[in-house]
Structures are given as C-alpha cells and as structure tokens.
Image (cartoon, rainbow, N blue to C red; front, side, top):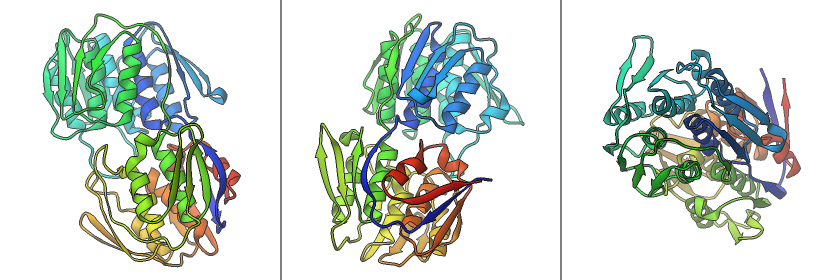
Length: 421
C-alpha cells in the first residue's frame, strides 16, 4: 500500500498551476452519454476518479479515447450496449450515480448499484430518485442495493429539492435535457460545477437557463450533438494550495484560478492576516510570511458559502495560528475524522456535535496518520509540512482521487514529500 512520507519543509515558494475541476469533469463525462456524436473534453485532470468513470462509460458501450498527458478525452457514445453499470466500478466511486440521468434519458432505463466513495457521511441520493420520479420514471431499489429506473418517456416537471444537492441537481439536469417539455428545479445547487455542466450541455444544443442560481429551467430537446469543452479550474485544489502557502508561512502564486469561485476562502484567510493579491492575468498570490497570523471562525455551507471540502485543510492551518477558532460543519455530519489524526500530531482540537474548537499556535510533530477521506488526507499532508520530524500518511488512494500530481506540485514549491510503495 502506497504512502506519503512528509517532512518539515519550511516556507513554500514559487507558483503552481491548478488542474481542471474533479467535481466538474465527472458530470461532464457522464453527460457525453446524452448524444451519439464525438464529445471532446479538454483540461481533464489525471485522477483515479476520471479513469474509473472513463472505464464505466466504456463498459456501457462508449468509445473512449484518452490522452491524459495532454489532459484530453474524446468520447463517442454512438452505441450504448447496456444500461446496467458494472457493480465493481460503481462501488469505487460515488460519482458513478451520475450516469443514471443520461442513461434514463437516452435509453429509458438505468440500473446502478448504490455507490461507494469517501465515508464523510450520508449524502441525499434519494433526491436523485425523487427527481427521476417527478420526471415520470419508476424507481426501485433491491435488497442488494441495485437501483433500477425505467420510463416510457420522461416529461418535464416542477421539482423542489429538500436540500441543494449538487449530484441530484446534475442528474436531474441531464435527465431533463432530453425530456419532453420544461423542467424547473427549485432550491437547486448553485456551485460553479453546475454552471460548467449546463454550459457543456448548452453547447451540445441543450436549453438550460438559471444555472448558478437556486432556480434552473430546462427546456427538453429531442436530441443533442457533439461538442468541444474545456473544464473549469478546480477551486478546491486552488484552496488547498492557498492553505499550503498559509500554513508554511510561504509565498505562492496560484495560476489558472477563478477568484469569484473562492471568495469565502480568500475572505477567511485575510481575516487570519494572510495577504492575498489578485491579478486577473497572473493569478492569486498568497503570502503567509507575515506575522502574526491569528484565529478565525468558519461555518461550512452550500455554495456560495464556505466550502466543506476546504474545512479540514483550513482546520490544519488553524492549529498553527494564535488564538482559539471554532469550526462548524453543517454539510456532512461525519467530516471530523481528521481531528483524531491531527491531535495525534500535537494539535488541540475538541469536537462538540457539529462544532470543533481549535486552540491554535501548537507545535505539531510527525506521526503515522491515516487519510480517512480525500480532503482529510490533504489536511494531514499540510500538517506534515510544518510538523517536526517525519509524518507518514497512509491510505493515500483517497488523496489521489482528487489531486492531480499532488506530490510533484508540492515538491516544485519546496516541499519535502515523497510517495513510497
């Protein structure tokens, strides 16, 4: 089993280029099932999740051509040979459920096992099924967890989501794109990745309005055509490298980033005293080499609030600043599993329900820790960069699901980190 060996590295300096967004490319790849023609996707990150989804699409009959070295994937789903997604692939990644909407719209049937992924808490997959039912599909779940949706023809509907689920919003958008009539999604997720998916489908000939707001209107069309699309930059990767600059008291220029997508991260880092300079042509310069850095409080919320995916890296940073901070996690109920690992490194964090109380300005020390999920793993790596001694991070497959060339990018900034088998 591969591990990361991390040593105290001093201030990170230099520049890093952000890859295409993991949470954007996965629904876009799934949406290629909606048409018969070639879809060329650019800025595709080289991630395990991308490879899994490409294998899943190929198993359904799509022709998948990957040029990962150039971050390019070409998909032609001219013939779908099955609408039953292989269980062994679905179990590896929660985003596999995103093929249900396109399969249902394209073939009238989709069969997908309840998916796997990071164990960060319950995710409202029932909202996906609620949307399909509203569009006229019959949804059944077997005792083994196989979800089967069937329809004689999807029809537009008004759908209110009890929670602004990103995945449910994406799945319903894709299914409704080929439905008869108009679909309106209220209390929809507003994430930039939703906008990117809508832009992709609109390039294919779809008619989606309101993406990025809480009300999305989809006018169904009879068919969609092939297109070319470039994936937006990964705002969570950008936020993680901003945290790396801050926690090491370094100075890092973040290239290929959209500042509007990370406003809460910028605001909270500035509250801590981190200097951030935004240049539309160059990128974002993050300077943590200012003193003293102080505590702040954060509360995770659906977009445009503070992203839950940056909560754990931010918490690692807060262990190193002066004062007491309070973190409130409102999106996932099981996203404090990294606390035990950080405490084993010398942090002082106490959890009370949805809150975590961090007493900062602690001297961290190396330890053997486990990446319990994707973002928790990133947080432990960041902590290892400032901890005395050696930190060994195991279960790094979680981290490699979401960060392209993570080690290489950190090393170029001066980090002492290596991957070992």
